[in-house]
Length: 494
Ligand SMILES: Cc1ncc(COP(=O)(O)O)c(C=O)c1O
Image (cartoon, rainbow, N blue to C red; front, side, top):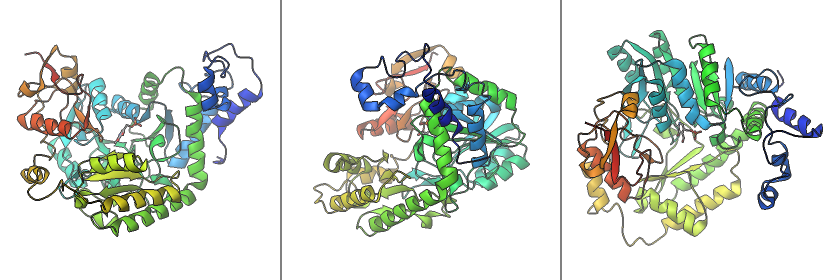
């Protein structure tokens, strides 16, 4: 197949060129009925290709022509047997993987530091999660991946597991030993599902961690919009081998797709694939070089540290994606949240993520050398600030709390019901601070990174209440619960 072709983008262009008189959705009719200021800003061309499945434009739900060809090209490019384009992100990818692989009551091993959309998949599928503890890095204050040893032990303890689900890389760009995990799970007859939302570029450069499709995982999701050039919400689900029921997978994907997909988004997936298949290695080489130079400069600035290759070999760190620039700012006496705010307010720079110790900047094929310079220059200036208060002074409140471990993610609480049972149970709201011992009916995940501290069906512990209050005080947004300020929480009625 010819990877320079973009069959789906071409189908849209052909439809526009044919000058078809449209009496179909969308109602803006190629921009004619659209608010003028919006149309002027987004441009006529985007409006012209915002069409709907029609003869010649194929159907994302039942592809037979251009969509099919575009997906086949993507599968080939990623070394998968089949690839499906998704227009609701890896969020829907996680849900599709679960709904395909597991039935109500089936056991599935999942890392605790999974994205909250994995929990959506558990609620929908009714599966029974067996949580695997990721490796915790106290120094950098982050969770890394689960190790092959953890996967092997979980399989040994739960021989009736149906599937193993792993997240690699993490939000911070740390990758698991995915080849070994796949080997262990497949040897034991378990399916392997991989949330590779943050690694859609891995397959296209030898210096990047091994991709999950190359490692032979059964189902893999990629957020093509995160690290590559597709529009937001665009993702791909790859399938490989003969362990997964294809008819079930196809049915599930149809359930999760709109019958009116945004076609510019679909085309952007097609084009992002072409870009990687034909120029990926060259483009990513430039990105890697840019990230390397920025990291070297940052590591020469006193008080800052950006990890790289040297992290490999730490528990849960098999490989590292250098395009994620994780800058540990603790040495400046600032929290990551403060540096993120300074970057935005003083320098008009927005990072992807901030936490207590770190800010994370994404370096992608869209990052320019000028942007990189501005980012590092800003960090250098911030490092020269006179700090009236060192947030991490030995006598300070943060340091005391860190030493007491009160910022450490609380232990996974006991699961008293399956996530789906708790979600569907009769529930009531109670004050969060008085909810100790109750069974939570919602997901509570500080965001970013969106890792659930408590999931539906789990007991709310004292440690969880304290931890979440600290996160709220530190200004962290809480996602998942009905009341995101956590004055009340939804629990199972007793
Ligand atoms: C590990 C992981 N999986 C899945 C998702 C959801 O991806 P999307 O935003 O493409 O729906 C995210 C989002 O940040 C994520 O970090």
